Image (cartoon, rainbow over all chains, first blue to last red; front, side, top):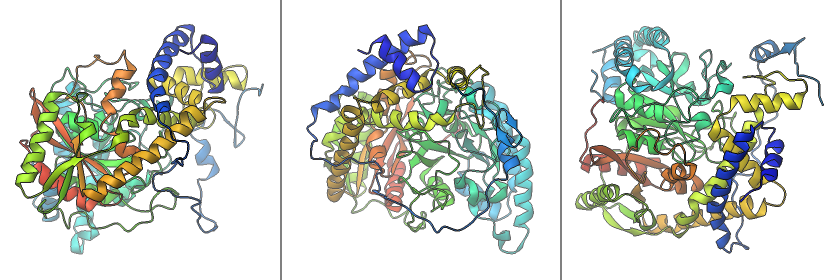
Length: 93
Length: 482
């Protein structure tokens, strides 16, 4: 089970607004899902290395050469509130 | 013309027996005819298809067919998770309802400027789901039974191909999203090796799992479409710098001498009896055709679904952080920036996206990271080791694609865990990053059953060859539905 307080804490970490109804319903579903995935705790994997990428790629580098990027006006054309060639946001609190 | 495969159609266009524009007209007419019942698309683009097909025909007038490659002439459906320059791309979400990308996904670049696109296919929001009912728009219906789901998340792409709305489609597969809907709609769905196809311009879900793949009428079409999308891309550092072979070269070589292992863990009582029966039939027919067939074991497959439902939500909770109302997509106004983030995301995301963001954030949060995310990554290592051992003994592994045939609309929407179980056969290959393909194996209760074949990293030519043989021995023939 996962408490209402925990659900609100996680929602806040994710910057996700949830209604009271969603807190109850999604919280209940999360509890059931977590109970089911707890099964992987049965395995003793203390000495097993973790896999982050199935092809085991690490540190892929490319030559540091200048290349064309999206023009600023174009990049801003899809923004909700472009102001003076910048992304505008409400007061930072 | 309607009953040709994409490969056959492309050959006729190359021989000038029909024009690309005529093919586009046929595809558009089919959309007109069935779309009201099927709902395969979020956005249809009939004029764009005609205009570009006309340009392809113009280029075909040049010497040597103007350098037009076979795949460029085929009317194509594109899942709405792939960015298409100038064409709205919603990802099945309200948060991108009015979003028009500024560039094309790299996987589309081999089609040049003239991709004959019929439309953008419906999908579960951000590719999370197994029924396409998580779309913020409307559910897609299965052409084989309009009261049933097409599977998901590439359900719109699968339904479009089954219904002839475009000759083939691109889907994406994170934990079965190409293969399971292909199985439920009676078509072929290929998840290539992780990294085989660039993810640049694919709206990210699980970055260590996502792969773009062909959804087609038969295996040869899948080989041709893979040829069009495979390759290294400097814009995607996880794309593989591995040579792209000729995927059609070995296709018709048959299964004689191939070693095929039927995966024991994926043939247990969690799988419907009717599905198991068809998979066993196909295995027997492949043996009769000259393959060596035996039993293979993937002991950690029993933990694959659980590991997947930690890793994928963890990655999605991180990837969906970019939808914050600042640079693109929906913004809901509020007084301060944090309230703006919360309100935008509350209004813009649907239930499943919220559930997975919560699950992933929880699994990555202080105090739980080791028990969930780190442990799941170790399970992933064990699953890769299981595959390595099994693929040492066998060339190809065989299993069902999905535990059931297409289920009724609405029958699993209230129970996320029941929906997640749809992925049990598909997620092991996703976690290992190996290629896997679903081929129609026959019918159970009048509905298509998919048979899954899996092989080692970058051995798509071998996988396609075995899949070609499987579709030829299977008791199934592609016909347009409904």
